[in-house]
Length: 237
Image 1: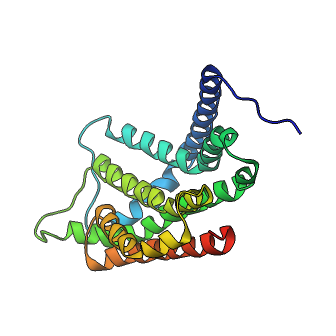
Image 2: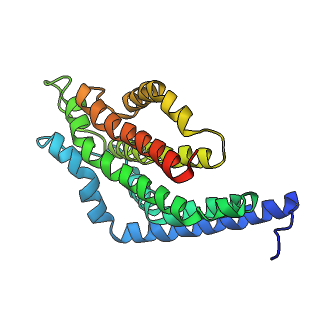
């Protein structure tokens, strides 16, 4: 069996460069696919606004605003479609520093990251109408005709934040696999976990009302509990 040889800093930088090139190509290809279906993506992304404010419209106030929104749709769609490639390239770059046992977790970890990220985006999408309804009805006498660019900036950041928030169980599990934390520490940290999750949910959710906080906080805490049991039963740590 041939062991991995230590690489120089220049070799690591060269590998990093090529992995970034692959990530860039994957995002570009995904973005081109998103451009082909941009009308369908617009209907999907604007549906929460139509549901929250059916009597209002989106509008543009400068000539380049629609083009900017089109590029954001392409970038967001490209990131979603390329997420398996992006996450695998990140894992492949750090893989040489891992033990053989830790490398066996490559596909389960990357698969979990992809599923959780996409699941977080989808979950955020279905909670968005509730948040928009709250925010757009603070002053009932004001017409909520939003700028197209502002709406997409808010919506895409919101969905991306949900996707990233759903990734934390994988990093907890990886930290346990590396021996940084144990199931006993996770059990003792339940109260802190609840506090951090609620604060994080309050930052992510736009409305801040009790319903939205509960809708995000409950699944995040359930994922914390699931991680605890996986660490305890699978890793036995």
